[in-house]
Length: 368
Image (cartoon, helix red, strand yellow):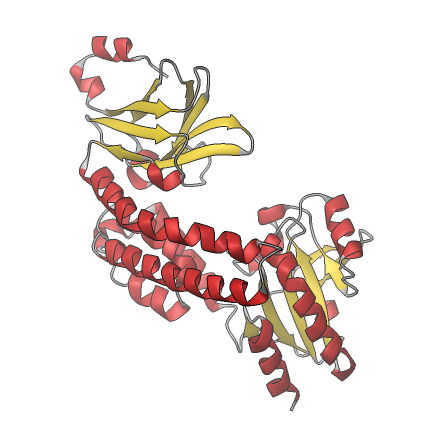
């Protein structure tokens, strides 16, 4: 990283090809590590680091294909479990002011100095009051001392507010399809969209953005998702079972009339919360020819096996212990867990991402 006094001595032509980021921080002591990098997960992606001094830091961001096509994120890291993430957009030839306060959640931090960063800040200002209401509601849902009624009410309120925030973000995304801010929002929102909705939205992307890496990745993701809708043949993967023996998913599926494939991980809170209900469904239909396979995105075998044992998950399990890099995650384009697939004896997908009552109802329908 080049200090500001060096930038001042550089020829104007060289300076105009870069973005200067001036950081202004509160609550972070001198020496705190600060990292910056593009969000796009590509080989040799742009990254840099520096430290806080006197409540400030600075970066010199090069103007290249990566910084033009992807947002960047600035992280102040005090320890591995605490960091702040502030998104920014490069603006060659400009100076951006990045404001980070340790007392704020991520949405309390912002960047100013260019049109895209201004729009992003405007969006944050609209979303922050909504998320300020969602956070305590989510805490109630996770509170072991809260009553079932209180949890249900809090979850309904949080979901309603979350829907409002999603609508706001969609409006911003659809109004900015010609720049990386809008495309980045679209990438985030893709997790909330149906395949048909995503297909329709991608058709609206202007030609000038069609080759943007984020757009290309979204199109590739959509193409993969199309292969895993109802009626398509399952995608076979071969992974080690709990004893280390390579086991194909197809070999487990063909033993049952229907097989619930549950993508999960021992470290996933929502997965663990859902598993008791999944176990009940499996137990109810096991005698009728329904099997279950757990496909874990764990990376540590000990944690994986411990969760299977302590939670009494008495069905088949496979995992290559590669976390999100799992062959299964790539094959089925799993973006979040828990995630399920329902596959019949012939290896045909007959249900996708079904949970609870929806999963149970689909099983009952197929067993008729």
